[in-house]
Image (cartoon, rainbow, N blue to C red; front, side):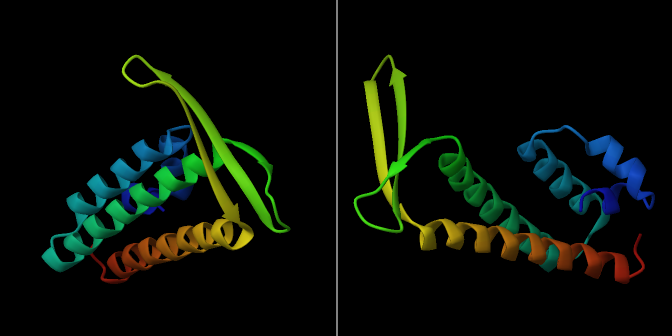
Length: 129
């Protein structure tokens, strides 16, 4: 999506952004949108979306970068994570999740991506590019 604010050439935009971490891509998307769009309501909407996407990405990372074990009931799993810090020592976090919990995160990802795409298409359709 960011490429469309960077260049009309999709491949050139994709090359410029390839291999970057998600957080960097999100920052570039936000920066490019701020550079191209002057409408304060649209900018505020993008800021709200960016914060929602950052929160969703943190939740996604907690889900994917953790260990998993079978839960105590059908359709339920335990997500666990270990960490060690100087101040807290060894910490184990365990969260019980259902497939509905995981699917809800996937649905939020899709909704946010769709909303960002609509903002970009609205900008491109306005002829401001």
